[in-house]
Length: 387
Image (cartoon, rainbow, N blue to C red; front, side, top):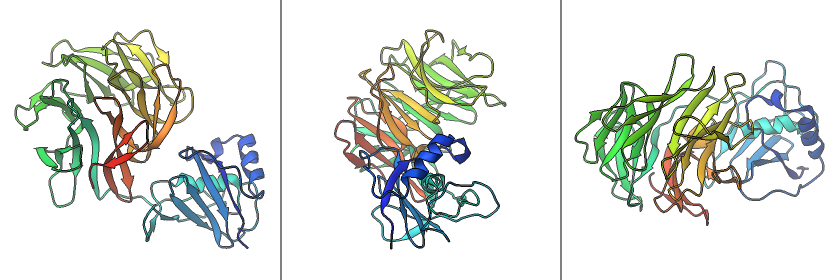
């Protein structure tokens, strides 16, 4: 007879061994006790169900995975040792066909961490995979009518495209392998990055201008006079830089020691930068705010999750950030500029605010395709931009 399901904490890192003994014990104790109280929609928990054939895990958005088992009716503490591997089979929401599980192998790792009867002789093997097509790195126009993005689809050259916010009339403006774009406040240019540095280009693809010889992730200052961006050296240490839009006045905000400062974005008044800091000693990433001289720092997060791409809302009331290691499969969170009222909105990464600060454009992994969507931060209503 199939056992009831229960929600247990989602392990956010691939290293199950990083769980404390208390966390393991609590998860294991909860396994055989029948249905749990559950949790609000969108929480970082997964449902673990024990069946005669194996263990199924499912998150609140409907993503699920199944692990084969020879002892599925038992519930024991996991032993993460040995040489055997498991291939994870998965189903995505609202589809009627299966695929190899790729995006959320953590679901099944959670089942193993909970010890809910799966074969736990070894960590799960999740197949390598490639993205078949991708619409990513959205940048909202200042008038709110369009979104620029990076497009890679089979049979066509990669490049920068623009789509209106109704999801129609997409068109190319510049071919090439570009990355990390941002729309100028006056709406006339995009800042983009490539292997050779930071560039600006007009919206019709003309007047491509090289600003720096290195760097990526450019962001325009609110007055449009400067760009902030980052570099990373051969040891992986990130440094934040500010440069005038004509390429003059380059200055660095260098982190101390072996710390890394990454992915900066301006406050709406241009006086502060939100960014990611990674400790050289632990590698842990947290969201920080500092002034544009690299001082007056304030730490906004203190957990052990990986974080990417913080962006400040145009009205100054929120900071959006994605939690995870692969942006299109991350968790999208928002918080106040002092770190309070942090809460999760949905899955996704590579974030860009609408000019009215009501919506966020983001990328999302669906099977082997990355698509663009928007979400209303108040109603959580989503809109598809590309497919």
